[in-house]
Image 1 (cartoon, helix red, strand yellow):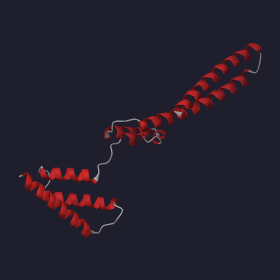
Image 2 (cartoon, rainbow, N blue to C red):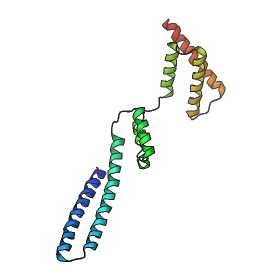
Image 3 (cartoon, helix red, strand yellow):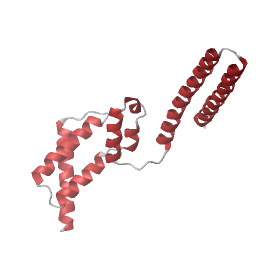
Image 4 (cartoon, one colour):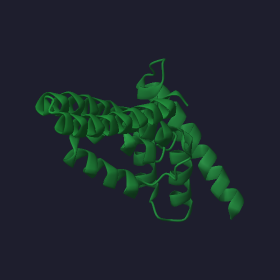
Length: 170
């Protein structure tokens, strides 16, 4: 709300100063005053207010984009990322992060891996290799370090549970 008010006030100020500058310049022309000094003073003031207005406008757009319920799409995030690389000031807005879908959790990735194994897309060796990689990533993200024995225990427990699930489906 405060940013919106700042944008409105700086826009009105820039327009008002511009109008006053035009009137003062016409008055200086008709009255024989210092036209160059009048134009320079009002022009600099107007340009300064326009610059401040642009800064507030960009901040307002950024705040609105971050708060908006934006559909998540990797394609859109990649496009915005390319645009940010071409126009560096846009990178400070971080809009590519706004459009990027959230990373899947370890549990979601494990479910997808198990689904691929049950559907026959992966052999048992491929499944175990990918599950081992997934569990080692999970270990890296945990606060408490685990050793290889814990990973092996998790792997055998998960493989046994998945084998029981597959046997129950048959």
